[in-house]
Length: 350
Ligand SMILES: Cc1cc2nc3c(=O)[nH]c(=O)nc-3n(C[C@H](O)[C@H](O)[C@H](O)COP(=O)(O)OP(=O)(O)OC[C@H]3O[C@@H](n4cnc5c(N)ncnc54)[C@H](O)[C@@H]3O)c2cc1C
Image (cartoon, rainbow, N blue to C red; front, side, top):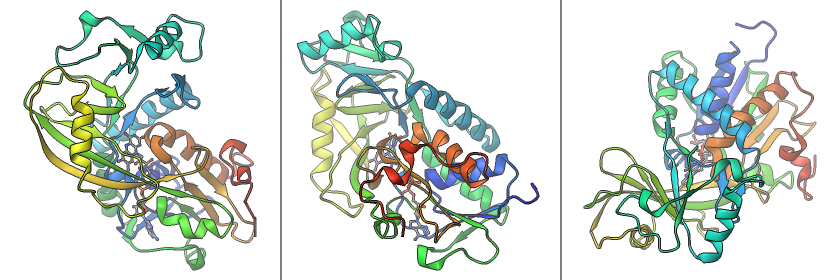
């Protein structure tokens, strides 16, 4: 055990709490995990990583560095748990129209920030189930992480080490006895406490399905806005929805038909699709799609935020957790400005 290192309470055991715990475990620091068992976005996440923003065909935030860090970290955690967590599965992007196809083809040819991440996909390379009248592109360096397997196996490990408790915590509880610091990984559970500091964490409602089509949809992720991710057993995850007007993680009745129709538009056949599973969650999201990290108030110096992971928790997680823990341990003065609470115009450090 590292001497003089702070004893850290991690609140929340979704993806964020899990990765913070592993970062501290690696460094031989003392930590405990508390979770109140409320619904976690991480129990719903498809776990996909994709270095490209499809809407405008641009690279994601610091895509290469974050994805390299993510791969190394998930592979290491997988070794610790005896599980294969990281799966490389290219994404086939079905073009929506001629203009998009031209833009993609131009950028794939080189000379653009996104060029290293995208390729043009020839029609004869396409799986026969895919319908792509305007053509398709490929993102070779994509895939998914089995988030549910990782968080549940990690929880079992911390439990077996006596480092996990089912317990609730909120900011008014302060720093509990026996701890020197609290890392807040409560996802949308932190909304009310952060609002006291003018920090708006928004709940973005999302749903995913697991389906079994009666035709083979191939072994690549296919994205035509709706995406279908092969799980390797003839079933596919299909998602997802994004809503700001639903603030509880409820499964909406109309969603399965909507998502199945969306996925079917990228397919040639008329086949039937059986819905096996339907899940909903709330993504903890900030206005600029960046998380909120680090100390937010001089009056609560023990409190370190690690929330607001949005739609891309899997890719950004290992990097933003490293920043959070480095700042907590005094290895860096503060977290980078782009994830610091001071970027909120409404931030009040009271
Ligand atoms: C439908 C859907 C699909 C998604 N797909 C992807 C994807 O493909 N790729 C990707 O990168 N991301 C995806 N995401 C986003 C991803 O789920 C999030 O970025 C990530 O899971 C957030 O993790 P978190 O640990 O911050 O929050 P959560 O997973 O919500 O965890 C919060 C934790 O805090 C606990 N908690 C809350 N309040 C308290 C309290 N008061 N006391 C104690 N514990 C508390 C909860 O029980 C839970 O354990 C998806 C999300 C949704 C909803």
